Length: 143
Length: 201
Image (cartoon, rainbow over all chains, first blue to last red; front, top):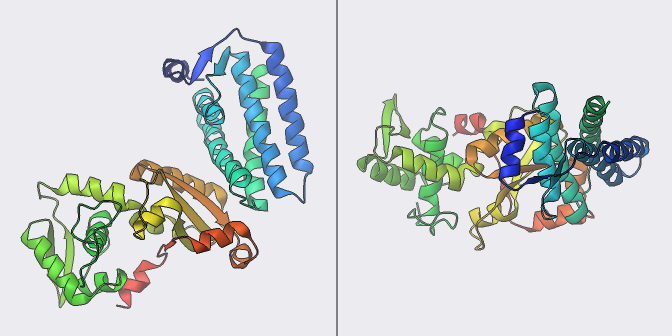
């Protein structure tokens, strides 16, 4: 995790510091894992599966934030800010790829929610691959 | 080359045709640009392209070399305007010129289009400055490859490039509302096999 990058996000007002809450983080991670399982089970509804996979990744990143005493500031653009935290927190080369993919999945999910864009099975596979990796990385970090 | 209106994306150029010509010459300097090929590629009148290139060469903005019977045009990197002009062309017209070559080698892409506000402005429809570039790919390319290239293009062009991918079947499906809306709005089709087009001119 790049402390410098996190500090820069705090200085820019993207994140704010709060008391670390490990218990809340574990609860959030448990929810993320449930979402991931649900996304894996959905086979007919691609848009629903993508939304679930996205929520799994987002909640896992948020769990990581809470464990590290951080929250996104404000509600506007909160999802994009969560992604910015993910990029700063998962800066190792093996994880950076997944953190970058989070933003792709966020935009796809927005298109499917607000523009009536129908996602396809390959989109869901892409989202699931990266959501799984993000959830696993957060779980490894919190254990 | 009949005089076309100034490009809405950056109405500093005397015509859309001139802007597209300069964008092609400046933004793809490694791709040979013979006069005849440029006219064909950009769907412009050959005599008009010659006059425009003569004018730009006289001003020192481009240079040309004779190779056999062909006149090959390239940007004049020694021009004091070069850096500035390159930056202007990249920001305003980079999407239409650079995205096609960047994605054409990704297997599974059958067609590529720009849509949304950038495509609308490029097509001459007035409106606000485009915030990002909407890219639609038809086919079944690998998602990771496409998103990786989109991130690189975002860095190069300086505007966010947002791809979506639809299967050939969905692109042909007239009952899909999202696809129907896109088809009814201004679309800029990207050339994915330019070598062949230039070669056949």
